[in-house]
Figure 1: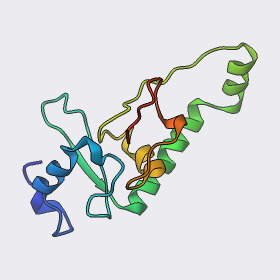
Figure 2 (figure 1 turned 90 degrees about the vertical axis):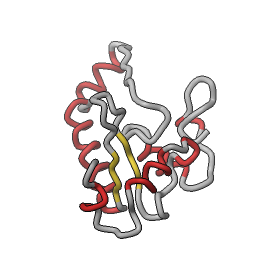
Figure 3 (figure 1 turned 90 degrees about the horizontal axis):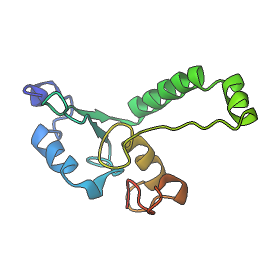
Length: 129
């Protein structure tokens, strides 16, 4: 991240501005500068990664994620889960600007709307709450 400002292609974007944006959990799902979806890593290595995606890059990321999901949750696997009444669990982030949460929040919440009930947890809170 040390050379972020040197590599970013939009002169309005600076690392300080992006960090200030992601420091506010209330802005999950909002577009940075009304143009970019911002995701971060958790920083377990000691360095928090910050990623900005325009609409096209976000669409590619969604398509790749769906393609990967289709490889593991095939029709036969789904049928087996249903036929044997098996259960499946997914552990993902439900808040913050983490990559697992932000695209869904951006897609269902947009700038000011609340999350639909299917995007919330058992306490009624979600990434936009």
